[in-house]
Image (tube, rainbow, N blue to C red; front, side):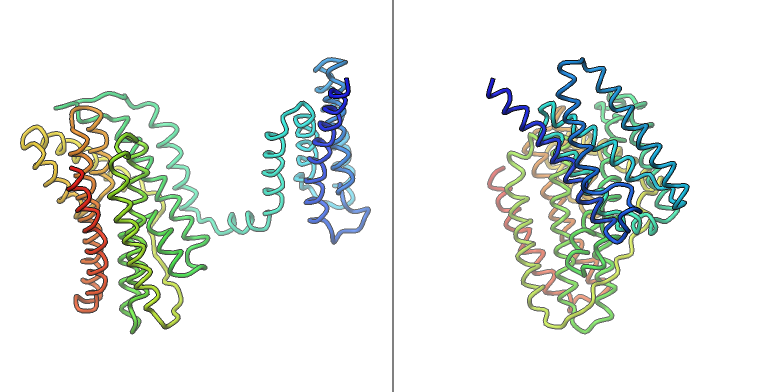
Amino acid sequence: MENQEYEVIIQLLAALAVGLLIGIERGWSGRYKDEGDRVAGLRTFSLIGLLGGIWAQLSAITGSWMLGVAFIAVVALIIASHIVGSRETEDVGITTEFAMMLTFSLGVWAALGYYIYSFAATAMVVALLGIKPILHQWVGNIKTEEIYSGIKLLIISLVLLPLLPNQGYGPWHAFNPYWIWWMVVLISGLSFAGYFAIKYAGNRLGTFLTAIIGGLASSTAVTLSMAQFATKHKHQTLFMGGVVIAASIMFIRVLIEVSVVNAGLLNRLWLPLTVMFTSLLLGSSWLWFSHQEADPGPKIELKNPFNLSTALKFGALLGVVMFLSAASNAWFGHEGVYALSIVSGLVDVDAITLSLSRLTLNNLGEEVAIMGIILASAVNTIVKGILFAVVVGMKQSFRLFAVLFFSVAPGLFIAFLMN
């Protein structure tokens, strides 16, 4: 009996804690208002949370239907308070009113014994309420084309993707419409996230963070932007370091893509890729700290976060690479796959990575796919140095070439040993 009473007390305290947490935030946000002008504060929210906890306990006696009645009664009081308050202040906002409903519901949830879930949801409520100015600023900075881009991404992922057939067509069953489009959604989503990360954080925090986040969206775009910015400055090592950082993020993209398509490859792929990734980080640190002059972070110009024509082109490229990968393996064996990986790496890593990862689920050996992915990644890393040199100059880019080459060489050596 004592244990049961102890449990009831704990549950009521949990419900009260929910109200206290939300009430602290609401009280703090309305701290400049007069006592009578606030709809609800610390005490009100604490009482609402405790009320939910009490009704949750009473429902064990009266039946769960009484929780519904109690919630309706609370909602009615909240609505009446809002109507009266809006007439006096002409404030039609209902954020606090919804927070009160959530407080009652979370108090009930906590008192029913679901402490972790209730407190986790409470933390999310407090966070959303607390970052109102930031959210409003973000919404105010969103452009029309970005809204349309988000809608397009939702359409291709939630509407179009489920309608596509999930089976292979053509020679070697290389064309799978569902899988190809799913990879388009994956790459578009990564680029979309990177675009907005740059917009809201990258430029403000300078070259370092811009290179990291920009690499998620497009390491090639970061390379070209860094190169253009370097032409306007006497000291270019800072921007070389940015290129190396962006190139290292490409290896994270590769690991994400492989884990989505065929996580089994990671058992043998992670070591050489990690070695190359770590070497690039060390090289970027050397370039970074050898730069003595303080420069402002470059403005990375990325295109529309989601462009349907670009997505279609990537889908077509992925389909072609998948077909060529299957054909190279069938006609020329392992050497054909390796040659295709090198050529693909000159342009893009994503397509060959996704293609080889997928083909290992059919008839391609894992060791061939792993070596092909590593070759493509290494070649694409070196290509970034070439792009930088074309814009800035070969002589000025020597240190960048040295860092990129000596970063990918250990990973290639380990891959050959493992193969």
